[in-house]
Length: 125
Image (tube, rainbow, N blue to C red):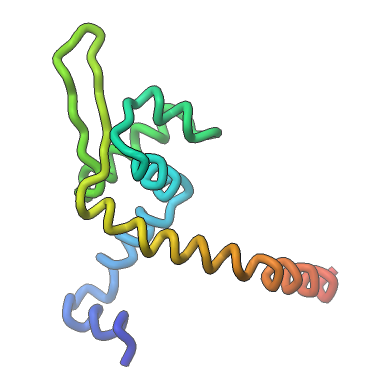
C-alpha cells in the first residue's frame, strides 16, 4: 500500500483533503508567490510587480487562500494610505525545499520530456 493510499484510509475521505491541498499548492501562481516571499516580507504592490502576468484579482485570491491555509501571514498597518505586507509562515517556508526539489526534477528532465512530446506529436500527427 502506498503512503497516499494509507493516508486516505486513515483520513477516511478518499483523498479529498490531500487533493484539495495539492490543488492549491500546485496552481499556476502559488509557487511563484511562495518563491517570491521566500526573499522576505513584501508589500502587495511590490509582489504584484515581481510576478509578471498575474492580475491583481488573482494575486489577491491566491494570497487569501495561502493565508487561509496558514502558509502566508498578512499584516495590515493602520497608516494612510494603508500598508499591507505579506510574509511566509513557518509552514510556508517548509514548502520551499520540496518546491525546489520539484523544480530541480523538472529542469533535469526537460530534454527527455521535450523529446517525448516531439515523438508523441510525430506519432499522432
